[in-house]
Image (tube, rainbow, N blue to C red):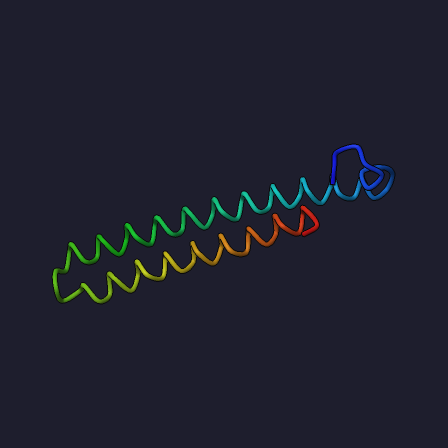
Length: 88
């Protein structure tokens, strides 16, 4: 769809602009939150592993894995929100 086409005029154009703006904003925020949670989970997991040695390694790895899962999930949802904003 070319910019300035009939699809971009009137109410449809306004709706596309609003949903695109909202979709990109919410998607970006979701990715940011996911990245922060993921990094925090990895850091906490590595700290637990380092502080407890081999005894706490399974717990530390589980915390890291949980952080990675939250980050990946947030990214997937955010991509979907951004796609919806692009009317995909």
